[in-house]
Length: 167
Image 1 (cartoon, rainbow, N blue to C red):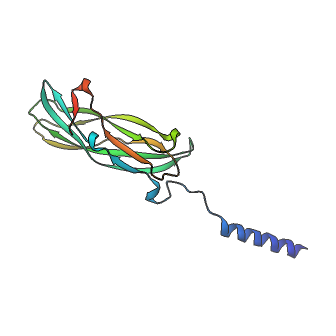
Image 2 (image 1 turned 45 degrees about the vertical axis):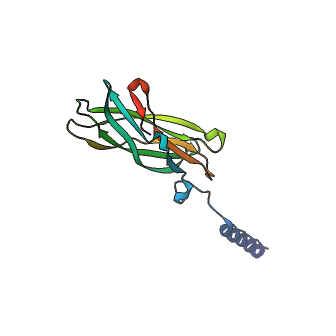
């Protein structure tokens, strides 16, 4: 009886090992698990003005990012850090450039839809006509089964700050 029990336990253990598939973790999965980041053409660049003069053109030129599983809240997260090109359009004394960008999921399960705004600033010295700035990253919760879910990013044009879109 002991031999039969031992053989049964070993065969159950082996069959369990052969059929075991660990739970997928977005951080350890391939890059296709992360949604694609799309830079919206209509929100790709803005112009900042001061005293009715065009001072800076700010445009998104790329991004870096990754995905991970946040164990604290039990959700998958996408982290995106856009890169910006800032061009001085006028001889001015303004050196500090403040602007905002957004990250948004507009498709997918309703509990993951949303838009978040992030603020950033850069410095471009007098006499310097072009600078690149990597913003601090923003985070969005994303569904595990990404499918066609994309993350959209773009610049906000805030009229109160004398900004307008440059389409």
